[in-house]
Image (cartoon, rainbow, N blue to C red; front, side, top):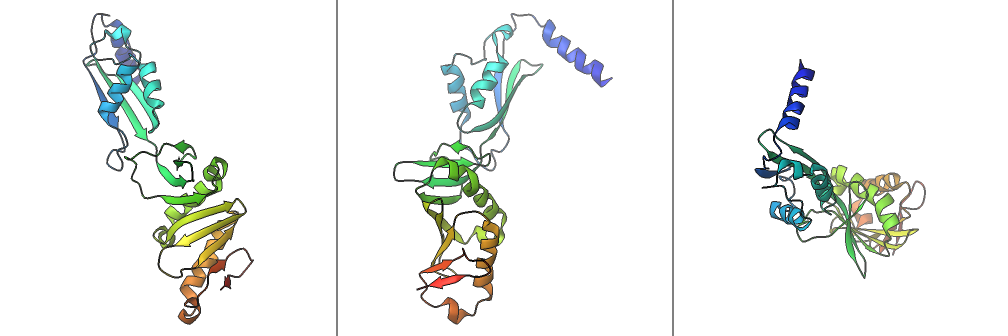
Length: 232
């Protein structure tokens, strides 16, 4: 029965007179409650600019594929799906990209999203994400650094404690904490095995006697197996 109904709906679209026009376009931004990086007027302007805005056009002149492709290529859009309703309304269902990392170099600022892709840094993107500074290439930013940022986001202990990362080179990465636990910079080295390194650091911050933590360390080095090395 469901198959017959689907066939009937499909036949209904095919049999509509070509003179019938598109009445409206509706945008369903599924995650608009969590973030709003773009506006409906911006999407409409994009379609008008490319001369594919459907409202008022005859149905046989409306290209759902071109509309879906144009919106899907918007720098803030992660996915887009376009379809026509029985009421001659074009509906676009879309999700926005989710940043996990903000990269700040001397010459550029950009984001890395949850799919490890470079994302435009806009004023409308106000998500609190991990900040990375220094000699940051796209390859390392979209690799282990993006993985680390997403891991931190899932870890309640670390999520509110990390201030930023500084990249001197891929083999010498420093972690800076907010003003709690220690003011020393944390030597990560490279980002391989970062979960083990962060587990050691957490143990140091939660189990070490306060008189030891209060010593004026300038660095806490996590590169050595089974220990945290403090330097003055």
